[in-house]
Image (cartoon, rainbow, N blue to C red; front, side, top):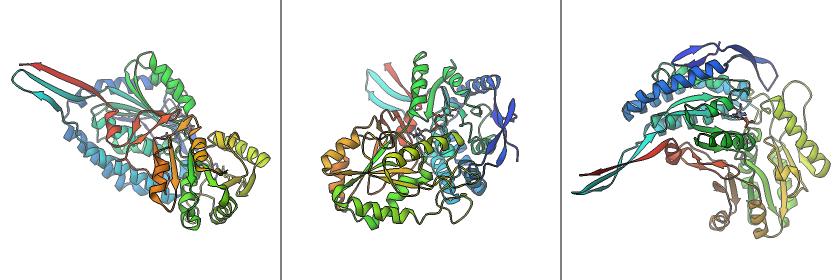
Length: 466
Ligand code: NAD
């Protein structure tokens, strides 16, 4: 199969091609087209040209396009899921889950309305609040969940009457390009454009004077660069950035019962998710026992190629990230105790077996930084107030969770945690209909849900003297 960019309604070749690597065996999945600056210019120009007409298109018609996209994704779910597994590495059932979230996002946003709100209507005045589109949106994406993160920008942006230029990450362009092929004849030309790069077009997209808003998911380092570049033209930005989610286990937890959910919450997608558990705070009185139960549970899991139905954990998505995570593993070996995993199997593929590290604490790089890979530090606490203080001491504030047999007790602790989302007795439960807010250095703005839609609108007030 050959992949194409989507520019001005046409599926076109890039200016060159690069091989996209399967992280499970380092084979070439396919060549991907790569755009150049001229094609970026064409994509933005097409988006700007199309936007006014699209904004004037009735919302019901815009919603119908989204519904049609959801149906196409449903019809091709098997192909999409397989491609996600090939390029991201995620086991096939979880790749299906991502493809299903795309369908849910299309369905959810196609049901949303942006009706005007009448604040005042009397003999003298009528004041109406409207939600109007921003113009051209640039969506810039990371490699860990390419389609979910793309659709959560595309669906609300186009429903609100914006046009969009999407740029996937250089190592995972294929599933987004397949999505482009599926929607090429659904949306009017120029409304949706997809370009790819080799990590060299993002800055130009952000700086482009015709781009009104940048919707970005990725690292805090890049998020800061985008925010400062956007400041020049006072562009709107929404930034979904790095996280270092803490989970606090209260002393009454039934560890055998919650172990599978904890393991899922920490190692989903081999922990290459912004909001998985990255620090696990455990009461000192139960530290040894909890470490043992988790190690016993996790050691049953199989790591390998995501197409193998027996595999629960796939590879690290790319070689650079693999090296970074191996660096964290070395740190863990030097100054912690690895009680599960910690292996880098010989042979092809960027594999690290899911790893639990005990006897580390705050101040260790594994606790303070985001490995973005399958290594979880288990940290002792003696006093829950101290655990809350340490959980909140991070510069990040994406997600957090509290686990207890007593949900009310957990909710009282949850109220004190500084994070966009605090889960109780679960972690990383996401849905396109539920807002995913950010705090501190984890970002600006909200993605998903109704609030995620409003991020793609300007408020406009029509104030009429009668
Ligand atoms: P990254 O910041 O390196 O790259 C993300 C995207 O930004 C890529 O498409 C890249 O080409 C582009 N880019 C690079 N430099 C740019 C610049 N100067 N201007 C504009 N665009 C530029 O992130 P990554 O390594 O692909 O992803 C991993 C990070 O993403 C982790 O820190 C993770 O926590 C974060 N993440 C956050 C969320 C969230 O919702 N908060 C979700 C997924 C991942």
